[in-house]
Image (cartoon, rainbow, N blue to C red; front, side, top):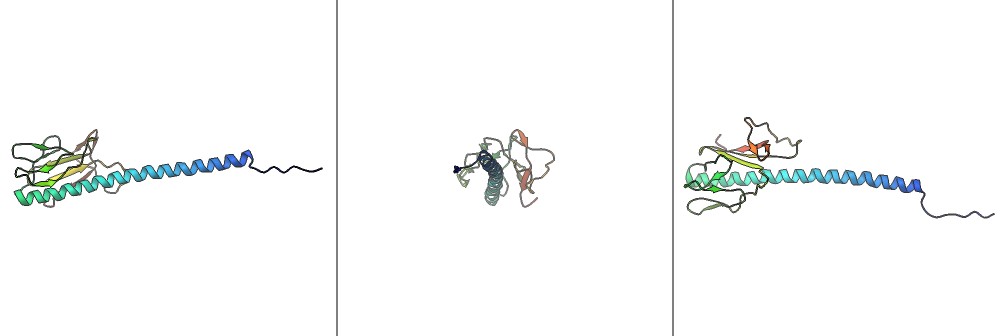
Amino acid sequence: MQSKIFHGFTLIELLIVIAILGILSTMGVGNFTTSRIKARDLARKSDLATIAKSLEAYVNDHRGYPLSDTNGKIVCLADGTICNWGSPFVDDQGTIYVAKLPDTSNGNYSYKSDGKTYTLYARLDNVNDPAIQTITPAVSCGALSCNYKISSTNQ
């Protein structure tokens, strides 16, 4: 009798390969999501550093920081005009300090200033970020409280 040899994979072999691919893809998606969160937080920190540099340029020209309004925005003109997030940061003379402030349609930034000092706040999403701080009293960054801040150098 001749035995027939079948070429191919058994059902068990196929199931093992599918399970391995499923595990690898789950790990990949998890790492991708974490990377996206870290990248967003890095962009927020970079945005605050850019705003801080523009505020230092402003203080060199005006001998004081721009005031803040009650909603955490920059009062950039003497008449009380607000520089909204996503718009240019300019003064009364038309000096452009930032061509476009970061857009915070999701409410992730806040600015507080008395004219002598300032503090910029943001909401970071990566709960394992060592830069996260407990801010007391709480400052609103949209629906959640801010958990990261940078302050003027003269504080």
